[in-house]
Each structure stands twice: as C-alpha cells, then as structure tokens.
Amino acid sequence: MTLRILSLAEAPQHRDQVIDWLWQAFDGDNHRDFFASTIDSCLRGDDLPMTFIALDGERLAGTVGAWRCDLISRQDLFPWLASLYVAQEYRGRGLSEQLQQHVIGWCQARQFPDLYLFASFSDYYERFGWRYIGDALDYPNKPVRLYHMDIRANASKA
Image (cartoon, rainbow, N blue to C red; front, side, top):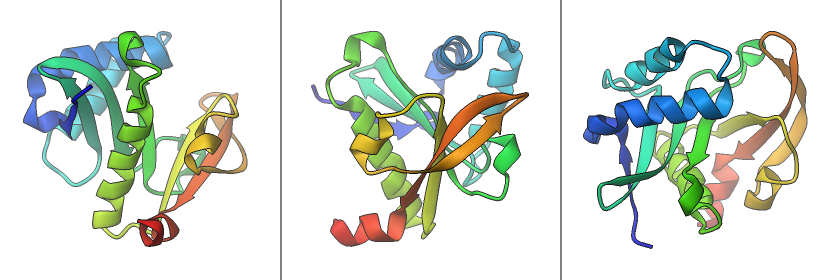
C-alpha cells in the first residue's frame, strides 16, 4: 500500500468526506455544521489546527488532526492528536500508526514538547507508545481516558 499523507489544505476536494467521517464516527448527535466549522478552521492556513489526510492515489484512506484543543475540560493541555479515522477498507494495515507518526513528526518539527489525545476506550493507543495519564470528561459528561506522548523522548529514539 503506497499512501501519501498531506495537509487537507493541499487537497481540499476531500473536505466534505472528512467532515462526514468525523460527524459519523465521533458524534452524530451534533450537527454536521459543527464538524464543518472545525475542518474549515484547518483550511485557513494557520499553524494550528491542522488536519492531515492519507491518500491512496486520489482515494481518501484516513485522516488525523493536530489541534490546539480537543477536550474542553482540559484546555491546559496542548497540542492534541485529534480525530484519527481510518476508512474501513484500510484498517488493519498500519495506517493508524502512520497517521499518528505523521502528527508526531509535524509537532516535533514545531518543537512542541508534548502531545495529548483522549479516547473512550483502552488498550489501543498504548501499543503506539502513548501513556495513560488519567481520566477526564468530554462534553457534557462523557468519561474519557487521557493519553500523553513526550515528543522530546520520541525524537531522541528516531
């Protein structure tokens, strides 16, 4: 599988598919416009937030974000690996790890010392070197698990 990972801003024609994926995968209870607003903020050209996509030729295979804030209850943490999604037909092929590594490398290049994410499940991100650091609440009161990646330590391993 030969994939390219690039900024969504470099291939904005995939905007609507990314929005639909995030809306369906992460919170179909919210209005689709919420996710459109989030993705559109990634297309403005600022350093953060950033959305990346994985392309197999011109076919969208996955997406991930590097965002300033992904968990309202923990605005003290920054930046976040956010909204990791791999299309069903690409799962089990290592794309999730490639997308995570892309965000880690992008954050290292910007000299961020840390990276965070949250999940509602366990025993997945730990496989990729993420360290569980405690629990928090996603809006309005959904329990989630917090994870941390020391980017400096990760960079010294490379």
